[in-house]
Image 1 (cartoon, one colour):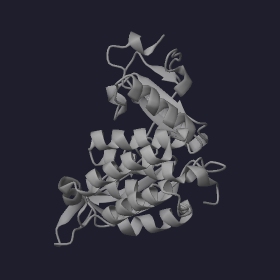
Image 2 (cartoon, rainbow, N blue to C red):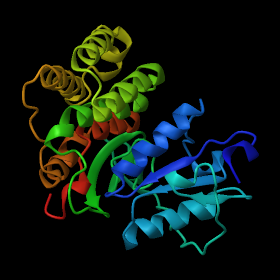
Image 3 (cartoon, rainbow, N blue to C red):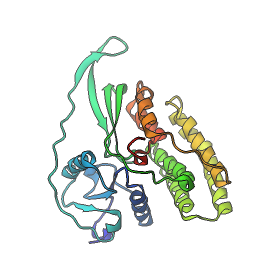
Length: 288
């Protein structure tokens, strides 16, 4: 049963912490068919699981599976031309209840407890962030690793490609799909070992486009350090493509420790951008 059997195949891609290679393969397969991945379980009947989820992530995936409309199929990236699967038992997800607390103006507003992840498009694999919201403003946040891997996919020789992967995912969260696609194509070329001069020129043109975008700068102005980190990724990628060493990512333990203070005071949409700009790699090992 191939993708052609579905009128509008928009797979929902879920990545375990050790599933980066599979996720990249799934993205290439989807892009080659001029499709877009689904953004929520209600949009699709196809779930693509990348990597080997641990128990906690598997439970979250089961909840998503329950929420998907029938008929539905469960797939791996290698199954995209031959999908098989069937319903599985799912766990119930308790909805958060609203409390009340004073906002900054002394009014009594509902406090909503909202989980982000671990199953969310363009989200760091294995991460769950629990938010306390008043209105759409984050009052408190807690970042929890629910799935970790045994070693990063983004080894030293792949770090430039890893930066491009992070750029692509951030741009998708920002809603700039065309630029995100360009970053993903450049990422895949870097992983394949495309000729250096040509790739360097194409990246330089891409980086100029991103840096000159007034809309992106307006969207990220005053939102944590999102713009600074994006500029840093672009600078490090360009230097790496020209032969300079690319620094490793910060350990994910340090990133998760710093994340709550960066999220507090942000609006919900801004919180997604902040997390995307941090992009912790929980596949790098259980100790971060």
